[in-house]
Image (cartoon, rainbow, N blue to C red):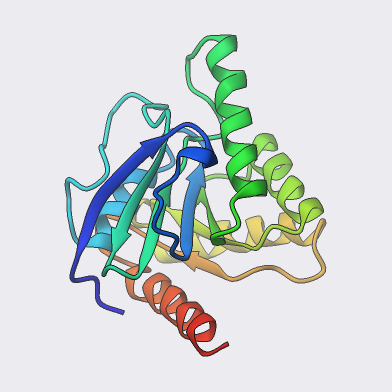
Length: 201
């Protein structure tokens, strides 16, 4: 798939306020500072589509971007929560859960994990929640240009083994880098194949 058009449509804090035009939604989520905005900009080919900040936790709404007039790329707040108040933290958690569990248009959730490090407890807890609720998801390891080839392969394999303690079969896993563009074509082709399946059903 080649993205020829990507534009911001709306920010909302509940699924009741989503864009009225219903299209398939592919959502992206991860802990604060995992590189979500950078990945979204890389996929779209627009460096300023999603706001990038050096301060974690800047995404505080559900942001919809329409892609090629045929589907939405949805940018969700991070689930690791940066330095925010308890009230804001609880509000964000409810917003995320309501969308992930309640948006009928969400086809797939891409969960971003930092490819340089071991999977953290809150990553596992979030992934287990998705598994328990039957939410379709894929995993994207980010910042993978920061490690050498062998170190990256070892780290990814270690993380896969951690996940295999909880799942008999892993969902699709992508290796990405916003600096080099690695993983962009694979992720977009995966989305394209799903859209073709939807359109042919």
